[in-house]
Each structure stands twice: as structure tokens, then as C-alpha cells.
Length: 374
Image (cartoon, rainbow, N blue to C red; front, top):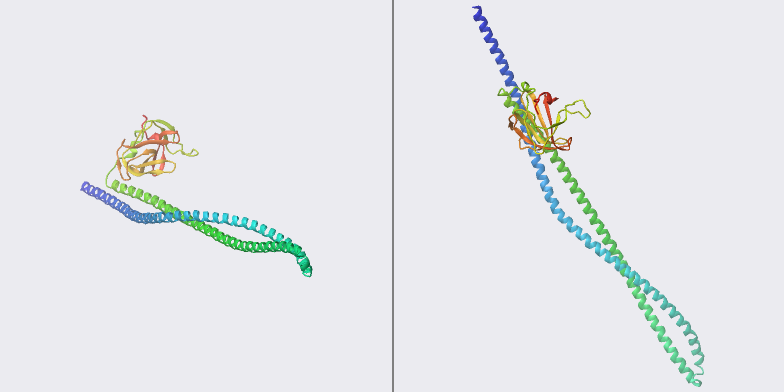
């Protein structure tokens, strides 16, 4: 009877533990599913934002293309107007030269006219004196009359020339003033168009830069969310199956590639080294050290292309400075499956890779986990 009671008690205890575990598992899975749903909603929002930004960028680019044509025409107009301004300035200088030459000529004519008038005055006085005895000296009178007539004609000609020159000077001065005004207006017009052109270019450049930065930020955010979604999907899948016991593989993991160790695990060094670096042959294949799920495959600043594989029990392996990788986030990989090719590793100034192992995001020494054979 005692044995039966103890057996029943044991069964109830096991059932109670199983129920408790089942509830805990269900709650954990529900929490992950809820988080996954939230992240998917965030991803959809980010995708919509990114689509809107892409449309804005496309519209702005189209507007820029249209306005570039306007700007090109404006630049041509400016060139034509600058040429006209140059021509106006040349004409203005030519008119100024003509004006100066004509003015000098006018002054000379005035001097000549004054000289002639001075000569005419004594002649006028003599003619008054000779008027009384003109009949007694006809030859002298005829001679003086002929000379006086020529002198008067010369004076009249100089006066006409002087009037014509003054009229020309006045016309040239008017033209010169008009040309100067027109040239100033042309220059102001050219400068105004140049200012407008500069403002358009600066405004477009600023708008395009702003949208490009927003797109880059949205794309980076979307990548992070998709990475989280991949991780959550993997965790949900892991909850539904037993999975490999990664902690039992310490010391027997295959190397990610066969090469020479260039850097060793030194987390306290400055700068710290949280993994190992390998110098490899060109086009060496990089392989997964254990089965798992890809949770990251992208370029990271300072590490080149990086692939991160999540294994069971919160263990991760990281492969950096890959030349390429065809894997996608969410892909399942097997142990020793090729995940990419070796790329340029700055630490060895040639082909190579950098490898890390992490447990709960904390770096652990990979050499203690890898097989002694490299």
C-alpha cells in the first residue's frame, strides 16, 4: 500500500513538473511570438517609410533633371548676356574715344574761328574808312573785297563745322549715356541670374542630401529589425525541437578555415582582440564550425562582410572580412558548410579572416573550442 502511494505521489510530482515546464514553455513562446509580431509591424512601418522616401527621392530626382535643363538654359542665357555686356562695353569705349577725338577737333576749330574773327575786325574798320574815297581807288577796293569775301566764307564754313561737331558731340554723349545704362542693366541682370542659379543648386543639393540620409537611416533600421525577426524566428523554432548540445562540442569544433594564426584572443589588450585572425590562401573557403541559423549577413564598418551564425544555448559564431556570401538571414547551415570566401584582411595585408565565438553575447576564446588540428 505504501509502495502504491509513493508511486502515485511520484507520478503526480512528475506530472506537476511537466505541467509547470509546459506552462513556462508556452509563456516563453508566447512572449517571443508577441515580440516577433511587434517587430514585424515595425518592419512594415519601416518598409512603408522607406517606400515613401524612395518615391520622394525619385520625384526630387525627376524635378532636378527638369530643373537641370532649366539651369543649363539659364547658363546659356548668362553666357549670351555676358557676351552682349562685353560688346556694349567695347562700343562704349569706342564712343568715348570718338567723343574725345571730336572734342579735341572742336576746340581746334574754335581757336581757328577766333583767329579769323580777329583778322576780320581790322578789315571792317578799313572798309569804313575806304568808303569815303572808294571812287578814287577802285583797284585797291576790289583787291580787298575779294580777300574779305574769301575770309568771310572761311569763317562761315568754320562756324558750320563747329555747329555740326557740337551736334555730333551731343549725339555721342547721349548714345554713350544710353549704352552705359544698358550695360549696367545687363550686368545686373546677369548677376541676378547667377545668384538665382546658385540658390537653386544649393537648395537641390541640400534636399537630396537630406533624403539620402533619411533613406540610409531607414535602410539601416530595417536591416536591424529584419535581423531581430530572424533571431526571434530561430528562437521559436528552437523552442519546438531539442537542438544540438553546443556546450559538449568544446575542443572538437572544426576550424573555419585552414591557415596561419595572425592574431590571438587577447580581450585585455589595447585595442582588445576578442577572437582570432587567420592568414589564408587566396579564394580560401570559409566554413561553419557548427550547425545553426544565419542571423546576420551584411557589411559592418571596420569588419567588411560579416556573417553571424546562432547555435543552440545562446552560442554564436562570427566570421568577418569575407569577400562574399550567398546566405540569407534565416538560412540554416550545417557543420562545415561553406558560408563564403576569404576576403582582404587588413591585419595580414592580404587574404584572411577574423573569427569569434560568443556566449550570451560575451566573447570567449575560440582556440579552446576548436580542434587541435588546424
